[in-house]
Image (cartoon, rainbow, N blue to C red; front, side, top):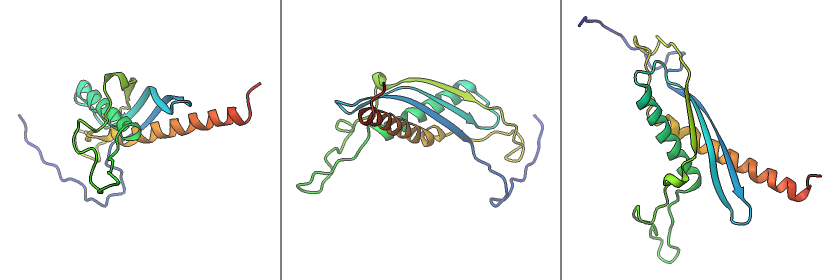
Length: 156
């Protein structure tokens, strides 16, 4: 195995060194019950060179489901009588289950980035979480606005 060296760039370089992504969600809203169901999600990630597609895809999908959970299910409740947390354990904390998981499509954009490091790899970590909550929230707001427009101005 050969040796080598690498001097990482300083933190104030004029380059973006992080992974970036774009995410989209399609939701359905039941106006009578106020229930939001996520039908499908798409995430496109640019994490530099992907060393293991299977684990990278799993990491991105897990993050997207976590972001869905942030947007639509999770909350910390306070008991108004005494100011204590009302849901102090996972038994009282709503998180998604398999029935809540939509179809998820994940794509990777091959970006050759030798500025970051000699291999061109970046971390994929929890980037899936970042855009998922926004994508689901925006899709829900759009669906509600479309429904409200139909009520005010019915389609002919």
